[in-house]
Image (cartoon, rainbow, N blue to C red; front, side, top):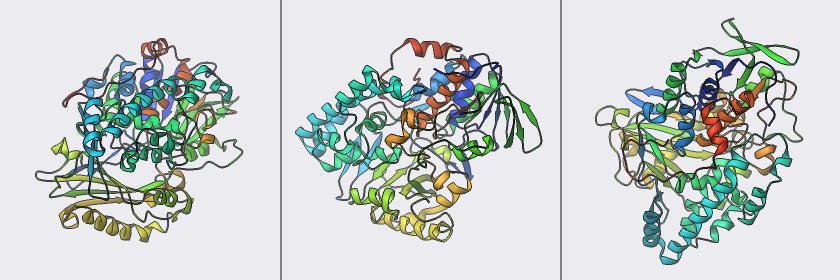
Length: 522
């Protein structure tokens, strides 16, 4: 593994999102002096927090899986996730509701899910589910350490026996076909293949290897942090501060001082200069490359994932058919993905994610209030409506979205809303997200593993990238890994106890949640 040469005692991390915080904790555990520069007033990045008239709104991800990865970052400084964040195991992990009026509770416990599949689709698919679950676990084992949790210096690193194991598992086939080998009911297939959208791909075109995301969602367990998802980055920032990190809030990095192939200092908008021996950039790729004064060397332009419209709604009522996370599928499927990824049209029959965090934490809303987060995927601005078009399109789309929710059983939704915030590609663009997408670079084969923008920067020997635009990719688990991989580039992966232990052990298979309440995933 290539590492940053020369002195690395003083490290500046630009960005206090999940990847930057994970990186800072691992660097601190390895004895580095760390300064974290963040343009916002507090931690979180994408996993931020907004207050809407007494409602505490998570602005980013709402689903937490693989919490042991967060615990590794806390452990690097002798701390633990459980000391800072109370986790609730979700049962069910999701509720899937279909256009034909049927519904399915998605359990991460194998026996409970087999019984639910048997009730929903019959004994043949119940047996198929057990085969699928076994395949997902083997797929995870084959991929995690070799292809996800690794720093790539060359595509030749793929030439390993694990590549043959992945091929033998069908990882290079198409996702929807592989899922179809186990399940005949098309509704069940959706539950285990929609996750391809997280990678920016349609299930019909995504590699079966991306079913590892379904493993995280449907086997490894889904948790909710009390206080909302923002409690995780807040806890990480508190742990890093306690371990000696110097946080500079409301401080934007505007320039870099370079000499002899190294960055020597970071300049802030305030005029302050922060000297450094190494630099970690966790900001959006366009921002990172602008600071570096360069563009990535790639034969073709980067392709970005679809975007999303999010409606945060504080209401005076809720609906008993909703779980903590509810997947509301439209009747259309293949056409929907074609609209999102090819034709650039808004979904004609949308599939939606509805999250109700007040299911497990009523303190996020005023007394008697409920908080609903509605996510509708939409095309990014490179193939769909431009950011400027969304200025007028957004309010109209909001009204059609609310009408669709009411048609799907949430009667009275419009009248129940007391506070709301609509987020569209216009807002994502204003935040610096390329193509107006918060999901960054898509996971096509040419943008995955060693072909994704690497976390070492050509021509600058002491700069490392972290975040969803680089290795290994998009999602809470992967950006936590990204932060650790960036730290490994600086410390050679041997500085902190957590890094040494990780190198000496095989990839764990996280256990599914077995109860509600506080959970220590360490």
